[in-house]
Amino acid sequence: MRFTLAAAALLASLFSARAQTQNDPASIEGTWSSGTGAVSTGGQICIPGTLETTTFTYPNNTGISYSFTTDGHFEEVLYRYKSNATDPRCITGFISWQHGTYTFEGDGLKLTPFESDGRIQVQDPCAAVTNQITYYNQIMTMKNWGVSIDPLTARYTLNLFGFDGAPVPPLYLIARPPNMLPTHTLTGTNSTGQTSTRRRRYSVTSLLKRLANADSA
Image 1 (spheres, rainbow, N blue to C red):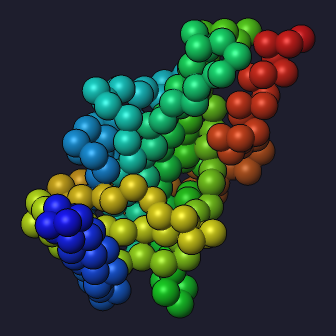
Image 2 (cartoon, helix red, strand yellow):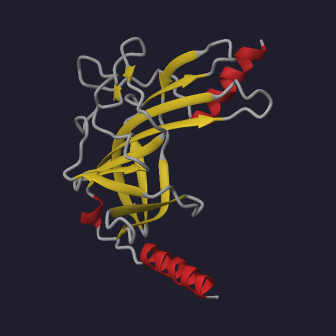
Image 3 (cartoon, rainbow, N blue to C red):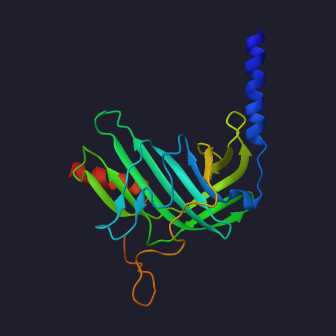
């Protein structure tokens, strides 16, 4: 009984600590990373260029990272895998990078990327195209957010909740001020400074479908 009560008390304290988040706009500043902190913004993972010159450096672990400035700019890196129940050998890995501006909307956030800059690399050993880099542009809406202090590690923690209210894995502060690439459009501009809009861009879902169709052709 003692163990049960102690466990219940610990769970209650953890829930309470995460629930007591602060939505002070200034508190979001910094670079935040999930898990071990292997994934980070700031050019450690992606150097965007043309599709031929864009380079990705893969971290040791999967994860996500966000950076925010106090003047409304963000940067995002996502590194994930998608398993294949039919053939376990056909694990799809994708890593994406984008940056742009963000706004506070009620209790939430809206992240609007610079359309020409986002890049995603998809690797699928079983697809007709096993390795592909293309443009990436995914507007992100967070229903809620808050910064708290993790009760076990005493680290500042950014808690994000997706458009449907589902929690994003906790993100821990690893740098303040944030580690970011320049907060302006980096690619896709012509000599007059106008951004080209003729490039096709894909979300993760549409790109995976595209690769699957190529494999079955």
